[in-house]
Length: 197
Image 1 (cartoon, one colour):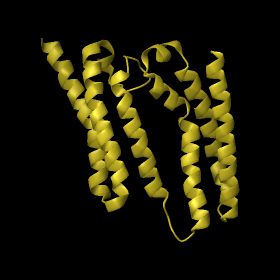
Image 2: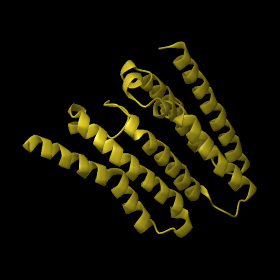
Image 3: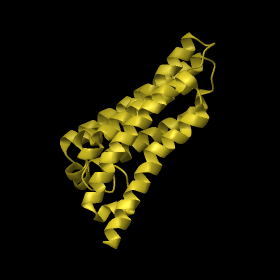
Image 4: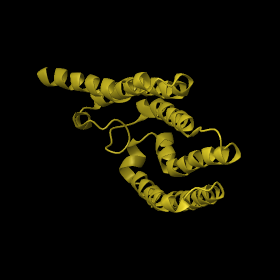
């Protein structure tokens, strides 16, 4: 592992610990049961280490879009911060609940950022749409990820707009359709066309 990657691993893990420590304190101040969250914090730190080690491998560094790989290495501290903000808000304004709103907005932003970098992704088993038939079809990989970039940005926008209308029976199926079903069907059609030709 390169020195830069090791530094990112250490800093992001320490940051996870600090953020989740603050979250425990805020939870206790608000009268919550912080002990139930401790295993989640440990799991998050372990996931951070696994993500950083996996994303530092040569195949990912060579084939993955650089900014998408960097986002993956910092996703656990970003998630910790995203969890902390609503906790602070609920401590200051206990009568209101913004957790669901914040989660939808946070996930929407992640989907938009990820979708933006999909077309720059080379074939790899770690980052991107991992349909098995795409790993041996470079043209299909790029076409599917180009379409996926649009559908993921649209699904991210749908997530961000969800709290404005709160129609989960519309938003959730739309997000699933855009983020998973449409790229899946498109890639399968490309694969079957290539196989018949």
